[in-house]
Length: 124
Image (cartoon, helix red, strand yellow):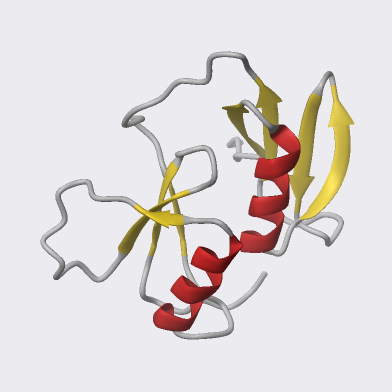
């Protein structure tokens, strides 16, 4: 028997703002509030995709974290998806890229870094 990742917890100042952002990015829906945290997740019941638990914190950790999210476009190419993510509130981040990487490093509205990869994947 094995385990699987069912939730990713992100400490944040404004759970609603971050939840709105990640719902837009991932096509997730608000699932409700649990113990003061906003939970967003796949809109399809029983999906194997993990939910995001946006946990309020007065002092969320800043700086480079040992874990970050990678996202892939599902219904458009990388350039079009980059435009969509920037319009949703993402911002480019310089972590020392050369400019030749096949991915874009971005940050969500609270500065959490994530990468937009090139490969288009099928939606789940």
